Image 1 (cartoon, rainbow, N blue to C red):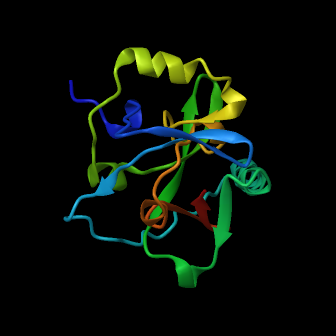
Image 2 (spheres, rainbow, N blue to C red):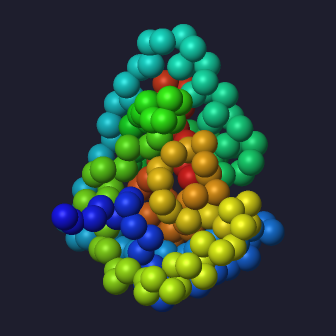
Length: 162
């Protein structure tokens, strides 16, 4: 079974860099030449409780400096925010299916290296495992040109991961 980029930690010439007292893994990934930026209209969340939860979680992530709200004029490409029911809870996620298909996937890390990375306390490490915005520490550091393509659209505005 083929693994998706979002399911496995991929690192090409990875380095753990200290930024804002947080260790993050730099993924040296590139976009395929076939990648075409696209702006997808947001899906309006109609359930009032989910609207409030989504708005609150995005504000928390902005306060933690994991995301930044960006004006429409700076948006090149956006992806949908999605609500996922999992383990009897609600997860607010970015749907990066399109972006994942357009990334050059480097060779995956040797298992021993993954264990070394996972040994670092969660609050000190950000790595890409899930695209759940609530668990922002599980985010890797992408090159800025890929971050520019990874903005999430919501009915409250546009959010760019940092």
